[in-house]
Amino acid sequence: MDEYLAQVELSSQTEGERANVRRLGVADRKLRLAGLQAERRALYPLRETGEIDEAGFRALLQELDLAETATVGDMGQR
Image 1 (cartoon, one colour):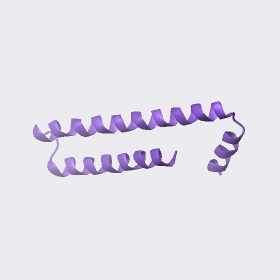
Image 2 (cartoon, rainbow, N blue to C red):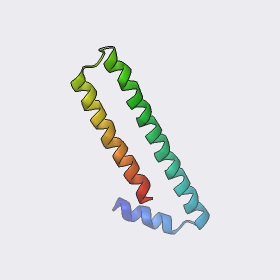
Image 3 (cartoon, rainbow, N blue to C red):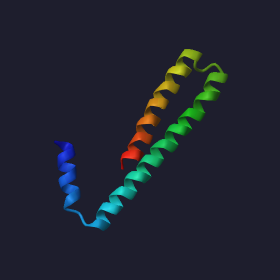
Image 4 (tube, helix red, strand yellow):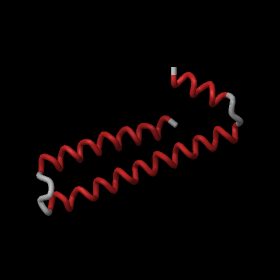
């Protein structure tokens, strides 16, 4: 239902408004991806200093992988 309502709302917008929504969506996804990449870079020093163990490091990397995959997938759909 939410998807339907979003489509109805989009259909009532002008082309310029739809273009702005698309640009904002792309910018949002790029920012999310940059944040995820920064989180990934921050994990390596934590592992090296022993603040997190190998299992924790791998679990966090896997979560980041999934989040990045979802973000990149969103980019392809828009």
